[in-house]
Amino acid sequence: MVKTLEQAIAELENLSSADQEQIGRKLLSHVEKLRRLRVEIDKGIRSLDSGHTSELNIEDFIRQKNKQHGRA
Image (cartoon, rainbow, N blue to C red; front, side, top):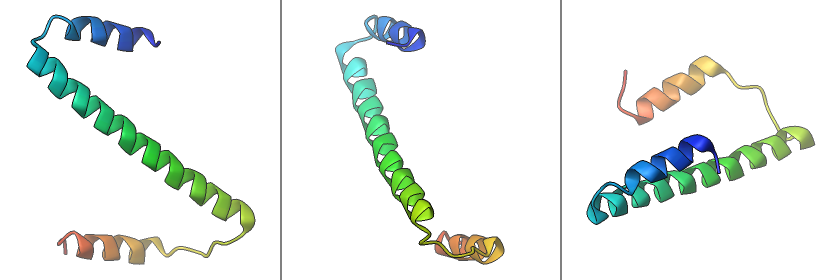
């Protein structure tokens, strides 16, 4: 295990059970998000490798995303 993670776990042992539980749930949620992101990245890489791509107009992409999130 990475030294920093070992230190963090050692510090967690000094917290209440409720705090440990809450932090544990948040950590597991974060790890699951990272796993899902890795799956999406791998799919994107496979798509690029197979040539199933098209050129992206970054300005249009940003406008579209801003519109989706209520930004002008």
